[in-house]
Length: 272
Length: 254
Image (cartoon, rainbow over all chains, first blue to last red; front, side):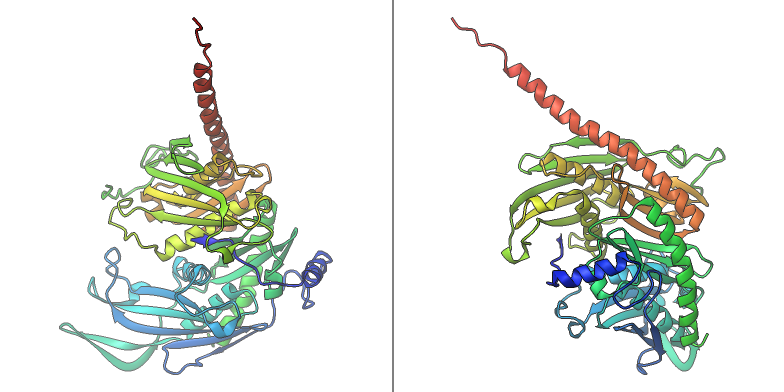
């Protein structure tokens, strides 16, 4: 069952400092309300993966590895490859993360990242069909949170996109029932570049890219994922409160701007 | 069972497969207080959706360590019956159900005055008996009625409805076929008096103008559903009054 989360004990004075600074148009790390923390992306950091990328979003650190294997297609899409996104909140990343099967936060993180990639048709799944209805390529996107300092959704989705753009797959040949993988490495077919932008609501103020300190005082969260032509391809609201319609109208416009800037950074890191 | 997939979701007149206009809700039936043991309960039919919601609590937290010192913990389970969809669904909770349990809880947290019941839990069960597209929204509409029926103090009722896109046109309250073949889905939960959107998800592709128009359509539908919810609550209590009045007939003293 999903239960109201127990927030870590944070001193009231510290909470007040974070909230007051935001109310004054400032932030604890001296950013503007609409700006991101510094973003650094490295690609190809895991040689054994088909593709990989590590992102530093401020002090948040997320590693994404892509593995491509052969498998069976879903019955309702016999001519399409399969995309699977999984997220691990690794216990070394934060004191509240515990070993065990993914909890609702890990599942939500994976599903929001998945939604952006899937709905924008970022991966050309039709190009991953080897034998209609029998054999297709399965793309596993594993999101590994290594250091949690807030906004895992944006860090995870940007790293996932960079890792997908970095991924190389082998050439496949079908002989009878056998699939032969040839070492010739070609890029994974990518058609779109979805970028998520996450907002936090602290009192009545809207901030972009909340850090962990800000997440602990915010009332609600909203992620808006924008695809390359500037349309929305995924959204997810979280948190214990909500957004007014005026706030939502403002948010989607900021999302389009920030997504374009971050997309350029990701593509530069992936050398596209 | 619905195996036939129509080629067109809109006909020449702009009507949908079930004959609705683009801005029309499916028929909705709401009933309040229909389970005997639960502290509060509600039933909703919306199209072919058949959903039960029940509330237990505020009650002592089990296990105790989940309790919060300054407010009640809300717990929520969204669950689909194995026979609720075309192909049998395993009764074990799927990743989708786990996510929906979370977003449904978060859509109702803003309305419940949880600080009145510290150290307790309020448990909310949403059971999908038959699913026909938009079940998370119908579930929220029913769950907020169940909370009210349990007598839990709330700011207001929460209503929810989805807007989608079929053949390039925004359409209210997608049915199962429209949802599966449609180009976008935008479920929204709304508190009309507070002007607060408490559930917002989206998949598919929407431009910014489409999003704004879709959000407005969903909010208007939520307002309509909100009126229906109030009627359903009033109905239950007017029925109780009738029963009470019948019993009050004066006894004949010999």
